[in-house]
Length: 253
Length: 253
DNA sequence: CGTTGAGTTGACTCCTATCAAGAAATGTGG
DNA sequence: CCACATTTCTTGATAGGAGTCAACTCAACG
Image (cartoon, rainbow over all chains, first blue to last red; front, side, top):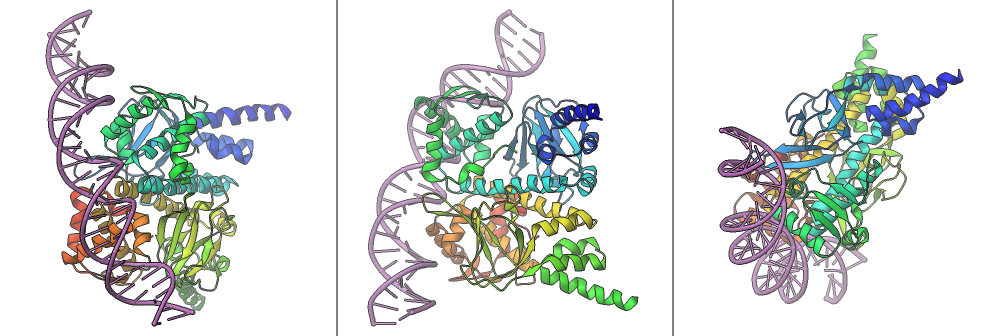
């Protein structure tokens, strides 16, 4: 049935694109009906507005989420009230893997702007990974990637200066935007200076100063939330001088 | 066959204990022959001496490793020569999950003292997880735990003072030793001040000063590598003041 | 018994947090 | 649509925590 075949290939693309799990199934050469099975378990909820939560610390874990558009911030609330940002999740990236172990989420996740996510019920995903050849391995890979990020983070937060941290952050965003088809040199930050600072272990004032500093050096063009990278090479140089371990900080998934 | 049953239960304990994957199979109530299958794929290599590598950055990934005794340090080498310690792995803990994603290890792992590890060939483990009910979920949990550690690390490295970092480190060791049956208040550090500093994002001099400081405050008794915790409560207090997000920094697995 | 590496301690410097005030943007309600 | 309130961002001044440099002690080891 050649016609079915063609239809299925189309389905693959659209289904994967829609469910946001493209990275999960595309490299596999999944069977057509496997794609459909994967597609079938995905819930497409209505878009989140700025400030809406996907889940909160302590809430019971049931699904993982794939960002389709917008930005998700994951964070924890420290007892003294301050929040610690632990991740920004751009389109194509996965949120919620922290909850598998205990069955409860150990951080909260909220939308920084209007954001669409796909919900993948985890128990149903596990049924699939147990039966669809190769899908299990893809899940292991996905989680391994998250674990690898830790290495880059330790270098960044342990050894690097404020300048290096912001450079690494901007390059990370650049690469991730690019991999999803956006410009790698011009984009809008959906997070505040404070949130960037929290993520990078810096005070918001330091982040602000660095933006103006990078602008003075003609490395960036900054207009509030709008960023234009003028000298990508300069940003890279800021990293490679001290450490080159930052490559794996946050690659696209 | 009641007798077989008893033997198998014994086997469960010894097999799990030997292979170091106790945490992986014990909570499952695995079938007897499943235990044997898990046990069968584990390779028991000869003990490592201080300085021996399990794997190095860039080497191809084939197995994960479970520490049976001793300590493994995982680290990356920065271009400028300095090393960044990214983890210390105590008995019962797993090393090497970083390699799944790319098929190459992104850090090196070496023994800090005489150390015994079990090697679990990953492709064979994957065959098992695909067929043994529940084992897949345990693997997901194990990896989720590693991902969760990231959250604690970000708080620790992003927001905490030197004092808080060392307190968190010592408490983490304490809990992990305790969970494996060792004393929670008295133990030997297998890593140097420099390595602790690298892991915590501090200079070795700072670590040294903090040890003497803690000793002056009668929180610790320090004799070179030997540590005795006198005031566990004081250590906890150092954390809870600023942040209580550090619980999950490094729990036993 | 000299050599080597690890650890301690002191003096000094510098990066970045903190405090503070003003500017710009965003949101709100009449 | 405008005035007011609120938040975000910027910029400056100051202070403190931890890094760096350096000298010394101590233990390990051949």
